[in-house]
Amino acid sequence: MVAVTTAWLTVWLSLRRFYREKWWEAKMRAYTDLIQALHHIKWDIEITIKAHMRGQDTDTEYFNQSGERHRAAWDEIRRQIDVGEFLYSTASVKILRALIGDPKSAPEDSYLEYLFRTQEEVEKCLPAIKASARRDLGLPTVSTMMAASN
Image (cartoon, rainbow, N blue to C red):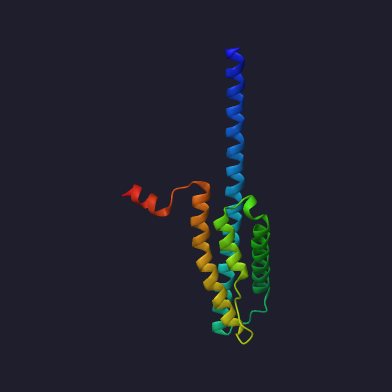
């Protein structure tokens, strides 16, 4: 009887750990995809702002591909918001909703003003999401890692 109970308990604990690790991996992959989407938006906006400030023609294959990546990244973020608290912490979902929900431009704004506002919002969102992901995944914070290395 003791051997059967011990075997059952061992199997149960092993399966529980396995499922917990798989869940953590899924959350890590989702956060990584989200951070990459934010990176693409940030990078594409930087490129577009620089081109507009130089008066460079943005109707080229390169900028068209950049625009496609940009739209795909926004679509990914919207998709992740729909996934919501199934994979992400409540804090992460609030950060993403604030990014999507904030109006980035007023009707009288120029396209360049819109880009600057969007860039500012994404640059605020990126570190906030990283910090939220670290907490959600149980990873050490950057300040904890720096203190440990000293």
